[in-house]
Length: 629
Image 1 (tube, rainbow, N blue to C red):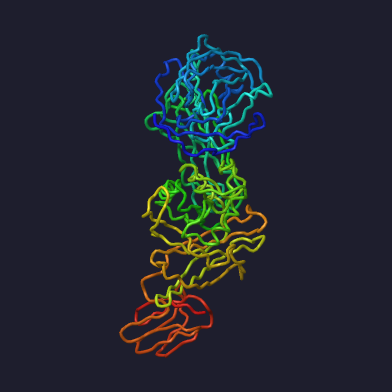
Image 2: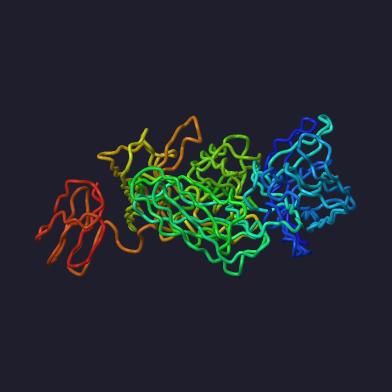
């Protein structure tokens, strides 16, 4: 079975053994095949998804992985027997000592049941209990312990969201004389690959579990939105239909019947969607979702059928775009993999602006001074690449990891496609109250670029945010470790048009209007360049208080003469606040960028405009932008 080491020391585990902190290492592998089927009078019970990763502490010793059966579930299955326990095991030395355990608690009590077994690596191991265990009314724990060497990865885990009942791992601490446990979810990992096979004549026939409901935390008042839910079949009968009832605040509850195409067998999950939801007034509403009536029958355990989520509706929300800042250098051999991952994630998206800072792992020919200064966002303790920031938010609560474990600053290691997509979704769900619009004019003759950014805020701000403008370029061919000498570098930041940390914005009637001008270097290709503008907070003493309010981006206007307009009879030029017409023309007029008429020339050689800004001059049907300073 192929195994690839992805990232050593991905996360710092807060487990102390002989005063040393452990770092878990993991390997990714193809999912092992489950060999056995569940008998007719049996069902599976557990929390794990597909077995895809192997995890280890990187030290010699005795390790445990366990799952919890809480008292509520024990009571539901009282009298049923555990006949087999399936455990997904990773890699380890040959013939290690392994035991299946049933424990009353994790406080050091003697096992209720133990049984030695011969483990097989990189497989689902099916341990048939020599004496089936009859479930009583009290909660308990089931798992395994195994003796390992320092380079073992014994824990088989999934890559799902960790369930705190299914993600315990432990290590025997010789000094304490006890096992020390932690939750894998607290370190950004998933669940242990452990499943119980329950057998008995009194197993539940119909029992749905509503595992989770996903819905935006903020929505725009009066606009439709959707929610999704994940339901699990915790009984023996295959479910073909079930009802979903949802209620928004005090409104009348609505019910939809869902068809699970292909059938929902025992232990399988199904994702459903409820569309066309709307909240017509500002405020926070609870959305309560309940599943019921599996195959039209009564659910035998309704305590786990309902989930409530709070949603806030705001009428002054504006559309949000997310700023992705990627730290990557030519020396970074792992960076091409992450570039490809970002390309896949962003292929069909127009709501994420991607900027690459050539810093974080040394420097290269595309490094600029500002990118080196942005290393502050790592939070100290060293830098690395590939790395990323999303809206300069600290994503610690979502499980984002860095080189030294869970992050405490905005920069994180983009470990997987699923993680990054989840982080982007989270950022997009955050409310935005500031809009941005970019206009740009490029003069091919002088290589002068003028960028105007306008916008407004729909809410009162506690402090003045900063406007930031980046210029990026695609198609830069050069060396890249892991990519060769002809690697194409895209989204490289070429220049910060504002100050490094942005310039403080001044609002007039909640609106702002700023213009910046620079001259492009001779080696830059304007046809490959883009403008990225964003408004963010800035606190020079706290990198976690520099969050981005909103972002906009566009390719440079390129390919037509800018600043002057020439047809067969007339030449137009803008100088300071004057638009000059040289030659003959029939009709000429000046409009604002949004189409409002400002002045008609009426045969004049020039006209004067009072206000600075970007205008459209139309001469005998030919339109063009001009900048008035």
